[in-house]
View (cartoon, rainbow, N blue to C red):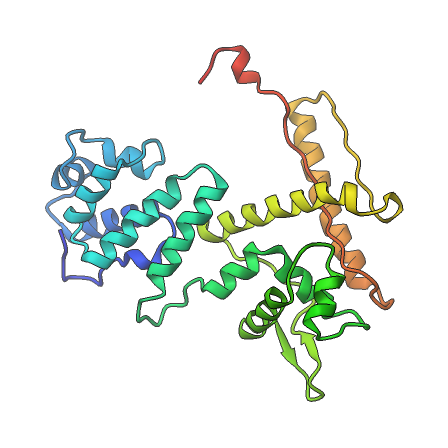
Length: 291
């Protein structure tokens, strides 16, 4: 199914296999003046149902292991492309965050062997966005009393992070350009704030990081004195409109907290984590027998 008329659609440039299939389909449709449809696409790739690939691309159907392999072969993938395609499908279709992270690690390993000018998510970036203490150490560097001593940093963090893990984190923070050394040799943040990028891979890592931070909040109930934390909860009945309004207020609150930190001219004392959670405890669909 390959064509030499336009550059190939490279699977390695995608973090969503459905978007890749859609791009491939559009390319084939553009190149085949006599006509190219989803039914032809399905037939050429060996699927009995004319609408199956359309449903897959629209996110209404998933691929099985056997269909992944058959589709990959029909798309003309070489061995590396086939392995990456299979890993990408399994990553995209995983519903559990922990499974997604395991699948993502496999994908990063397969990408790391590529010779390409394209900037892909690196292992160092993965570590920064998936290991909470990387972020904490980057923030800790901004404190006036910061000491670049792995044991001092390890003891300052309210957790069981070893000096070796601290040293590894600092090395990768420098590698990523998130911190640098001044002429004096002291470490310094490059920017005050770091915002994550979009994409399925980074979205999965963000969810994984959020789970870690939620766990840290739970641990703080036992490890941090009440006067040094603020943890409370509300259980309420609410309409859909009310839910949307509350969600908007939480987003506004996050922006306000960022403004407070940005405008704070006082010397920094501690590194804090702010978790704001809003989620349902009930499912109205279950009462109607919906699936």
